[in-house]
Length: 323
Image (cartoon, rainbow, N blue to C red):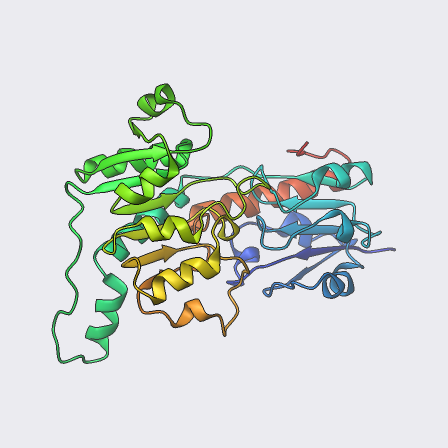
């Protein structure tokens, strides 16, 4: 009897098998499941690891599946990804080569929660003061938190997340302005955001700038050294969208030279962030390891529906197929 091999990728916290009931798969004698907690960046290394697998479970965009990789995985028949969007998978190429891609729903809005976790952490210098208290620092307080009342939050991107971020900002008494390449005054008004006629106005005016754009060929590198140069020296930059939207070297330079007060980052050019990356050494940046879509309820939904998708595929009835 030939065995169908299933690979669960990028299970950083070793929780995939505990977040859902995998018994419909694990109990089958014709199926074996392997779990990997690390992320491989080399395509050759991925081919070496994944060649035997018929089914691959992908956690969002942690591992990318471009056409070049798909062409080197002849055994692959199903990618069961979390979420119903995954820009890291060439879905068209997969479909054309007989690989089904299935997605899942999600629960709640953990990205919105992460945005505000970072905004509050940087504005109130929570990580720095926490570290000082725990280290036995003689000085009881060293930072003066930024009060949000009356300050300006600038949004680059005013879609679903930007609009939700704006609503919470107003509860803190903040002014909210927004810009995106396709934003109109009418759409800004509908989102409850003041329309900014240019990206430059957002960076020049805001006390906190929060980025909410989708990564594409047009938006890659859209935040530049010139943008950071416009910001107030007391201002903060927040990115929970995608690392490559920002010129990372320009951001590091702005933080090192104190052009801006600090930043809160959940996303990076390379993930996981290399251990020797210079951004790890900065004292005015709050870093989180891409937690924007990570929470207990989301994982439970992700993995429960992944199990369903695999079972349905094995039964010849693929579900939640992404087109």
